[in-house]
Image (cartoon, rainbow, N blue to C red; front, side, top):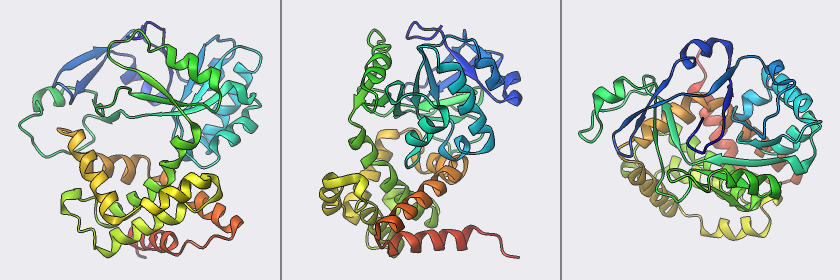
Length: 322
């Protein structure tokens, strides 16, 4: 039973069962505490979804994994399990047109599938090397399975209004929770910030994931990432809001956003987290999203020289030499 007062079941890969079958130790960067999370159920095969009666299925696979063979099988099984039930789906995976792809693959109606995401920054505690900090209890962190940091926002989760009733009902699960909340946001506003952010991550990768305090806004690579961000906002999917946002994008402004983000996340080392998360764990998703952006640009006849240059540089600098 979770703090929201609802029963939770996780569908995990078979090799994760041994670890997750025991209570999980969670370290909070927010207050330096270590808590135990337990009381959930586990499934290890998507076919086990058949005959279940979940109110919600939350899909958290990254966008690349979801469209790989195992992910496609998962979507097929979700479709079979939910098609003739009242189960709703919240899609936390990230990608261009991913909800439309999911609807087509699962054959679920649009009224039962909404998008969403989380502002929680979570990492496997023993897989992220961090510099020692006096405000982090190293002994507690060393004994944790996962560590997390909340952004200083009134909510930890966001659902979009792409399926309004699903979003409303999912957000309602958090209404009585004193710790965590879920907000409903317009789909267009949520998506406006996604793809442009990944262009900046590519620039950060080329700069070896520096702290924002160490970045010169006049640096050529940073400028390239900012210009790629502006190019993405030209796409028709962003409409007039994208055009307006594009005019506000500057190298200094984007850098200041990253500086504030780093300060908000302390004592979590945000550049190290982004290296772990976007430079490694979610890298395939990020690359696929950018390729989808470029395909959209080709279809619309939009030139994206800065983004293409970023992609080429990243490929050249990360591809092993023969």
